[in-house]
Amino acid sequence: MPWILKKILSALVLPPAGPLLLAVVGLLLVRRRPRLGKSLAWTGFIALWLLSTPAVTKPMLASIEDVLPLDIARAKGAQAIVVLGGGSYRAAPEYGGDTVSRWSLERIRYAARLQRETGLPLLVSGGAPLGGVAEGRSMRAALEREFGAKVRWVEDASADTRENARLSAPMLREAGVRRILLVTHAWHMQRALGEFAAAGLEIVAAPTGYETGAPPTPLDWLPGPGGLWAGRIALNERLGRLVQRITPP
Image 1 (tube, rainbow, N blue to C red):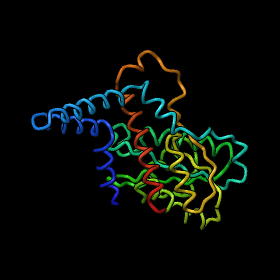
Image 2: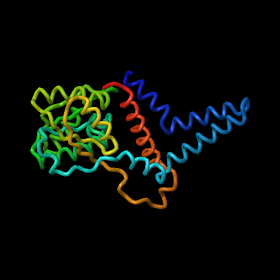
Image 3: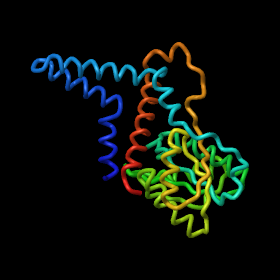
Image 4: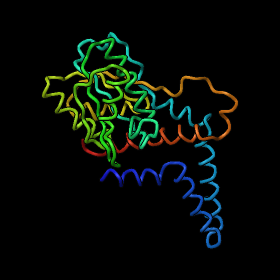
């Protein structure tokens, strides 16, 4: 399935669009099927409320942050560090063009630290499915200019996690690399592990950006953008894992 079609379908299913569409369908049915219409409308409203409430969505997110932080002793035997792109900050005025997003920045910061600790070469992976500068190129620029970390390989044609793995693996194998440290967000790690294992690599998980370590506060019972973001990420990753299981590598 083309990347853009997958993104459109997921956007229509995930919050806020999914619950809102359900509520709209319910309202349209109220005159012809009052009971069904009201049920759908209330279900959409309640779902959106719950999926915007951190007290609900933080546990959802915690359930997919199911890979422990890296014990550096496990890095022995690894031959390279692979860091996956997490999106672009498009047309950034203060940088004069495209650069890394917040998620990509969190990932490359940790990758730079790992390189200092291990001395391993770096591969950055990420394309530009919506145009502009490829994530991989922006990541290399930030790593080298701002973190002083040398990047050996740049994969700049991928559009999703599966392509990250498919396009990075040949570059690594050509250099004799079989075992890697894989850097991505904790909530994304399980899916990334599956794709890179399917590409024939041995992986040591090096997750970063845990979102659920802080204890809850009374404000977590109120809906807000942070709660909506956490719910969307949790559902998106669950959906991605399901698709990963039912589609061939």
